Length: 61
Image (cartoon, rainbow, N blue to C red; front, side, top):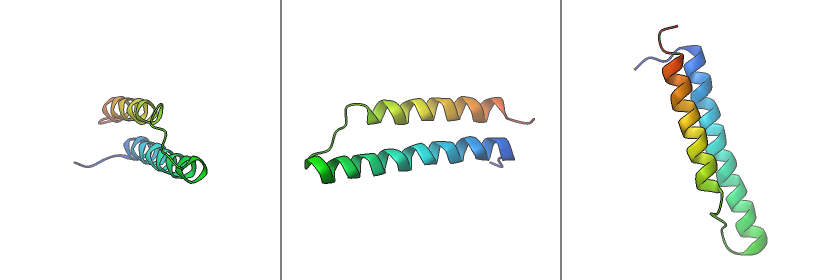
């Protein structure tokens, strides 16, 4: 599957959200000694849904 520039930007933003969530959880674990998975799955899920919609909407444009 070939991606155009706009689709790649949506993919990179999703990867950025994943890396941000990993860094957030690592920092929370270092400070408090336990991970906090209360909102992280929802943040990643929202970024995934937005990225998929963006990739599909930017298809063949």
